[in-house]
Length: 104
Image (tube, rainbow, N blue to C red):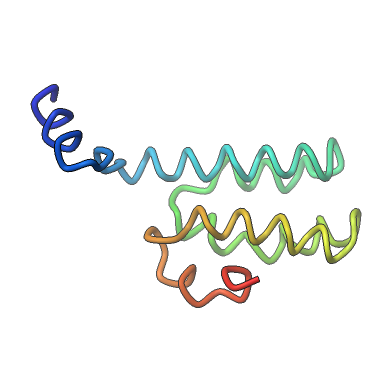
């Protein structure tokens, strides 16, 4: 493993993340946004995020996340949050490249 880390360091790149690590990184970011924007009112959605099994499941929760934040904080705040979250999916889900939130 150390040899691979050295190899990626020589190329100036990070070692590729495992799919599980990507899912966990995205899940944690979504959870942080939900806590910040919804507090306890987002509990049911947080549970769904927690049990999402892959990056695709997390991707398809985005509209619900957008709607929940928009209903509590307004559409502008929701769009800003979704723009940040959508960036996490780039290179992980094909929809992230053409998402309307990736161009805001």
